[in-house]
Amino acid sequence: MQQADRLPLVPDMAHWLLTEKILPAGRVLDLGSGSGRFSPMLARHAQTLTLMDISAQMLQYAQQALQAAGQHAQTVIRAPWTEFARRDQQYEVIFAHMAPFLTPADMPRLARLLAPAGTFVLSRVSGRTDLIFDQFIRAFPELKAHYVSETEQPLAQWQQKSRQAGWAQRQTSFNYQYTEEIDRDYLTEELPPLLSAAHQQAFQALIDRLFGATATQVTQKTLTVGVTAFTPPATDRRS
Image (cartoon, rainbow, N blue to C red):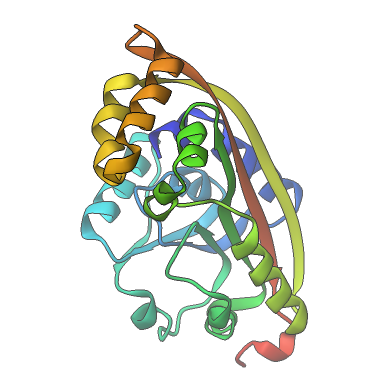
């Protein structure tokens, strides 16, 4: 999350939401707000902002982020999604970044929470590469069970479900290339316990080849964030 904050994801997201006229808006919900990465941007373009998360600690971080930016949330709700989804409040914009608690089966619940002509915006990391770390993943496939593989599949499932349900959608993606230092010590502490005894020697050979006698290397990384804005048909909304 800290690395993502050093990338221009938030201003890029703001530019797209403004260009698409999704923002500014009246009532905006930061659904699963986490530590508030997007909260100040949403607050700047909302008449009222609601933060919702299951974690009291994350909500505290989000409010601190808002305060540091000279913004605030009018409403802060700590609740699990299944409980929150039964609330009566409606929003012109519901924004969710990552939000692993949501699935396409939640589209009727989201429709109930949207005001007429409202929009649900789902943002997800849909691709990620790391020139050095990925070499270990390829060399030792057993590591794949321990690390998330970011793909376009979750967003594609949402898009397919929305088309079947007659929801309108707008899409974009943000692609970033950047460098980052990676520590030899981090890899030698993190990865060997996850490997079988048969792979320990091969791991040592690979790390020696990549790092030689150096303690750190600069790795080339990419990050892709996919975004889709969904608008349900009027028949899906409650009266």
